[in-house]
Amino acid sequence: ETGVTQTPRHLVMGMTNKKSLKCEQHLGHNAMYWYKQSAKKPLELMFVYSLEERVENNSVPSRFSPECPNSSHLFLHLHTLQPEDSALYLCASSKSPQGGAEKLFFGSGTQLSVL
Amino acid sequence: GQNIDQPTEMTATEGAIVQINCTYQTSGFNGLFWYQQHAGEAPTFLSYNVLDGLEEKGRFSSFLSRSKGYSYLLLKELQMKDSASYLCAVQDSNYQLIWGAGTKLIIKP
Image 1 (cartoon, each protein chain N blue to C red):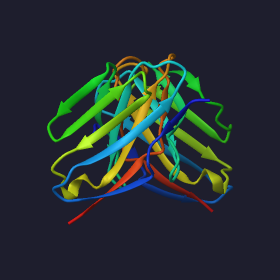
Image 2 (image 1 turned 135 degrees about the vertical axis):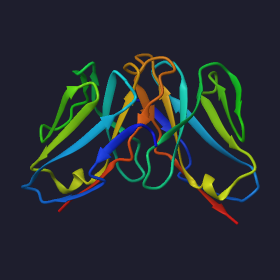
Image 3 (image 1 turned 180 degrees about the horizontal axis):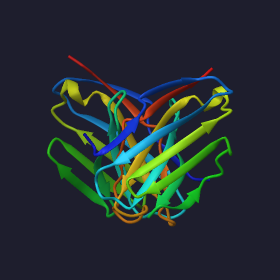
Image 4 (image 1 turned 30 degrees about the vertical axis):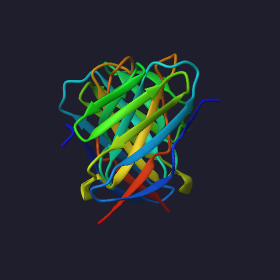
């Protein structure tokens, strides 16, 4: 148990669907992240939030839309995805945005399949 | 560009020792992390190195040579539960994390 919970664990959706991924952290951290993990590829940072404000967006397509209503919750809204978006989506949190020896606490991820 | 290299897969025997290497080329250096990720589970923090040398933590040790752009993770007295992927990540000069693709470690009885 890492203190970061993601739902759902698995999601299958069509290219025209709209769905949302949810992440909740119980650690009192101030920074939250969305990562994409594809097989045999490095983790790709998608979004970073610090104290509910987006501080980084790594040129992610607009079909991915993040939302951070408070410092404990993070959402990733999905619409009109492509098959190449199929991957494991990981949420993470840290005490503050990445710096120094700040380690990340990850959730178990949502395995997304786009048909 | 920035790059982290680590072997895709390694196999070792229960009770033995294994060394997982990580080499990096990044714009500056502010620390190196190792994470462990069991299949279907969250990556979890193992170690952090910012100065040259060896950091020991139980059966796991991590080594760093900044001049060589090189680190390794050493696992001793291997157990079946050590079967997992091991992720190397470097913080560059902007404190951005650059990730390797991970090394899948298979432990055989």
